[in-house]
Amino acid sequence: MTRLPAALAPWAGVLAALSPELALAMGPLLRHLDTLIGGHEPVAELRGAPEGLGGLGRSGPPERLTASEWLLAEEYPEEFLRRLVEGELLYLEPEFSAPAVRGRMVAVVDAGPTQAGAGRLVQLAALLVLHRRAAARGTELVVTVLGDQRPLAGDLAELLPAWLAARRPADPTPAEVADALAALDADDRAWVLTSPRLAERIPARPGVLTSEPAHWTAEGAGRVMVRIDGTSAELPLPAGPIAVRALRGAEFRRAAPARPARPQGAADLPTAPAFTSDARTLLARGADPAVLFAVNLPSQQGSPGGIPLRMRRHQLPGPVLAAGRTGRRLIALCVEGERLTAHSVGRSLGEPGRYFAELATFCLEAAELERMLAGPVLPVIRQGEELEVPLGIRWWRLGPDGRVADFGSTGPGTRGRSPFVRARDPRLFAGQVHEEARGLHHYLHSGGSEAWSHDSRTWELRTAQGERHRIAFREQAEVIGLVHGERPALITLSAAGHVVRCLPAGGGSRTLTRFSGGTGTPVVHPTRPLIAAETRPGRIVIGDASTGRVQFVIGGVA
Image 1 (cartoon, rainbow, N blue to C red):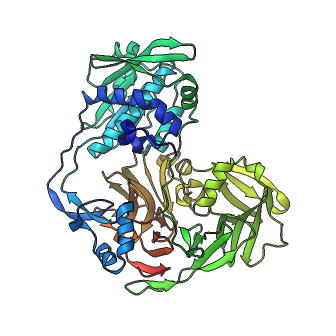
Image 2: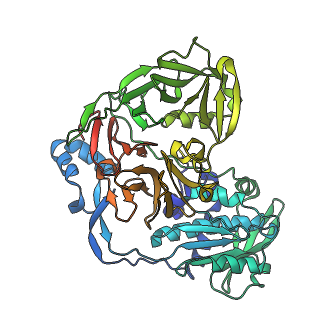
Image 3: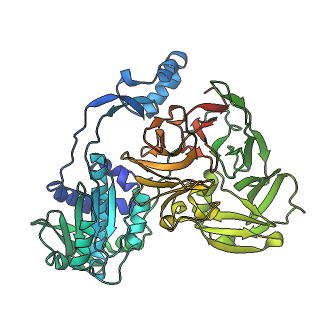
């Protein structure tokens, strides 16, 4: 991976959403623009009164180390030192009675023809700056495109492609600016990113950033004039070729979280757990991509420390791309040479080789296929005589004797995300998707219940019995599951990927400590209140997502 220069090191988090080449090319524009915006948008560091400890983090003073880490230091000091050096130790995080800042950071964006080219590059840099400043304030960045009532939110890997695709055929009007600003909450801090022409036609207000080309080269605009509330500066733009690729979205990427190295002798330990069907079956990968682990979870309640389980190891003829249990069959789709073939463990699917497809049919790039094979297995669903599997952003149907059909796109909330979560796809919802939830990026279902959000923070829940609930939170976290215990609840994962929480309807919050701080993203069962997490390489804990109680342990003691 390309190493960022020292001047851009503080920007590593936001620049992870860009290719290394674009990150370097955007550096000068980014830093100068941050200085301009900083004069009008200082970062707040205010906090409420301390309110005890809660949650887990990867840094802190020694007195906040968890008890399990001190036990590790006594029993295995060398492993403790390794974790210390690698930044893997867990610390208790302090909590405060009030959030740092009220209100969101909102970018009101002009996506009309006047802002094409250089203007869009300035907007890209401004969104990176504002996203970083919003995170420092303890809030989020929301993008409102003028002329489009749907706000865009989420992490940068989701936000940037959505912003880029939201081009408008005509320039916005002053009335559209007024409507967008009127729709904001009183505590929101809005920045209007537009052209000088539109800025002159709207009432004077703070937080208006305009841009227009100032110098041209043979490759296009080389410098741009940026003005913010009376302050102006001429700033450099990325060179022509990389700028064109950026404006086409070819330089955006989603950074995959790094997995720690597996310990020596861990070749047969399961990793990357997944629930791919409604059955109580947990699947996992092996070190060999052609190995699939599976276990059917017992229905009885476990002991306080969890019932030890062993997963059954299945050696398949090729790397496993997708798998799922249907009745007494465990069906796996494997990559064999240039083909995708189906294999069954348990009851037969018929004659061997009956289900197959040429990989070229799915138009998957080699890098994308490699990423899929490195993550949790994808779901495969049997419908009659056909198998359905999500590959890329499409659902595909595989019939007997090599028949393949494109079955439509995957849900908006599944695109650009890894791993694929079946609960995000409305196609797999057992009922009829609520009208308010259709087409939304933030959507989840579980059994007959569903939840949706326009901004990723305030969620509407509708249960199978028709009850309506609202759950809202201010923490920078991603909702990874919807479960039903005594009350319906959302399961969230903190932005840093360490802390798992249960947020039940009616208020309150429970930190699921035993499922936090693992090596990958925890997985929530699509229809049952179960959660599984790989807490360290080779060890998986499974339990109740509502209470945080560990029920089963694979590969060691909880």
